[in-house]
Image (tube, rainbow, N blue to C red; front, side, top):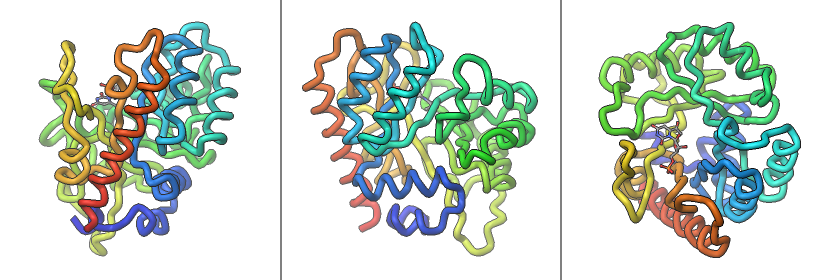
Length: 274
Ligand code: 6AU
């Protein structure tokens, strides 16, 4: 598609949503389209991994609900690391309820996600009201939302008309929905209203691994080349490919893997825009 042939910098200039703009600018500045998914339960290990991979990542993805002994001082540390290493934060909350409930889950409770997470995501299953619910909290704060249009798992139900309707929902809320969790570009999916042909949704793609094809629980991996060059996705999301199982991480190996995925992701992008 036309968008996939443009540079991140060209695309950054055209985005009005602050989170989308900042992410594209960070990608360009750091020459990294790597998002590291830090799925560990121990606070110190969580921070150690982020401090190690931070220099190589444009975005750090969290699941804060899996962290033992969570409190907001952890978020302060995360924000310090975000400034020190120049990355944005994506809480992978996968909201999936009615508008009123997701607005409360996003703003309140123990985690207060909207107060610190630049980007979050939601399942489109409830329909457009999930976007308006989340936007009522996130838009005034300059946040951005990704809809899960597809999933990386074996047997995913997010296919066909479900994916098409997710994309159509996003098109009707382009000020807050900045893109998709998906496995490919979405311009040709659903009913495009884009007469100028300048629709630009960010595609963040999980299920990325260089040394493994999947796990024992349905995850499926593709390479950065398949994801970015061949499928036109914008950001690779990598978790265990970088830090393995977790638990007593080897900092040097984590750093090496982060650098490796950063380099592979960037080379795959350069091959695409060439
Ligand atoms: O690289 P992994 O397999 O260790 O981790 C992949 C990460 C996990 C998942 O919760 C998440 O990506 N994920 C998502 C997201 C980001 O929404 C969607 C999906 O379809 N598959 C997937 O793995 O933190």
